[in-house]
Amino acid sequence: MGTARTNHRVCGGIPHSATERHGDATGSTERAGTEEQRQGGGAMPQVRVLGRGARITGGIFCLLFALHTWIWVLRDVLELGFGDTWDVWTGALGPGAGAGALADIPATTTVDAGLGLLQLAAAFAAFTGAWAAGGLMAVTTLLTFSYRLPVIWHAGLHSESSPYYALRGFFNDPSVDAAWVSCALTVFLCAPLAIVLMAGVRPWTGRPAQAAQPGHPAQPYEPPLPGESPQRPTRAHAVVAAVLLGVLVLFNAGWNIQTIYTSGGGTWLRLFTGEGTVSTLLDVSPAWEWLTLIVVCGTGAVLAMARTVSARGFSLGVAILLLPQALTFLWGYLDAGTFLELGDVAPVSGLFGRVQLLITLAGTVTLIVLAMRPGVPAQPAPVPFGSAVPFGPPPGQAPVQAQPYVPLQPGPGAAGPAPAGPAYAYPPAQPAGGPPAGPPPSGPPAAPPPPVAPPASPPSENGPGGGTFGPPPVY
Image 1: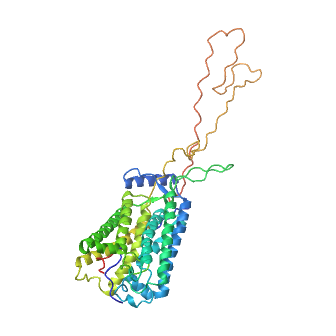
Image 2: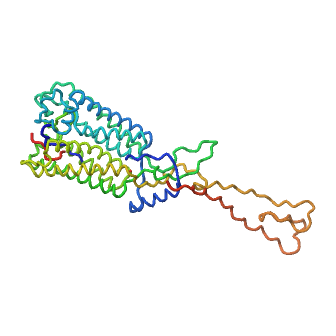
Image 3: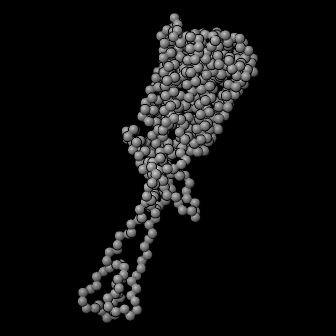
């Protein structure tokens, strides 16, 4: 294989809701709440999750995005062959590195491979009801919009007088028009998906949404088990995500500053617009990707520090996007034997690029492993004011039956003292002609206290039951 190119793209478990109950639900929830407060340092804010309708709708959109991405990947494999496609992904074939021998312009890079995996993961999480679906679909929407938007002007403005693609000679290729149309449609679909995700967020109360049907007894309330609750990242997960994403923000901001300082604003502007700097049809320019990852990684770091329920899915999505890039570019360096060659032009920038590559590789693998492990179950939010809250006994208690009033009924011809009866019976009627001699009769005694409700159901006997790796290119 050829020499790996020096400009590489920067790279900065889906827990499913349980369907089986086991153990003491009340005790499990109390233990989960104690654990959440212990790790979170106090009361946590209200939990908001995606509703079922918004989640399924978002999954359909993400599946369409994934279909678009993988069709272009399949096109590269069929038109160029798997070997040349892999060389383009690893950087062995690029501008000035033997790509002039290609009969067709390549369409994808390793960025598209990572984006396609992210879109599939978001669709899978949405259709399986995973709690991480909200964060995954949010980061998928943001990245799909950002990575497909610049293709509209790259392909639309590409001409012989003003080439945007670094590979020359593909000015009237029908693939350029196909990329323009398909990416414009993808960007258009990102808007309704964002609206669906924002409008579909609901407070999570841990209570079933269906009310009791007429003629059927209401089921007693059972607190959700930890596996049935949205999960916040553990303290270790939040620290790793915040540190990794924060470091990637610093790296990407540093590449922008270094480019402007050493090459001037004109070079940075070309790296931002992509004029003459993008190598494939769906490629994005380096400065555009730097700014995108600054926004995405910065948002993920803030969510991780706040330990929101969406932080697990959001950080997992960033890791899924960046891991394929780190793997393929490390493969390209090692295959060409240039990983330890920093170059004579900018050795310091080359060193920082290798360091960023290793940090990204180790950090993304760690984030994916932590996301597969259980998190800290969130506590249900209180029922909003004004909601339909039925009157009756507390959850888990049977309704109290009213005791009827039974007056005293003396037997016929009974003589002597009256038989024992209820303590709250009326006194006997007074004869006409005035009150009888002797002390006046005492009033009825005080009513007894109401009967005690039967105890709650005993607990169950069973026990309690997760850009560039280096300096910018020189053109």
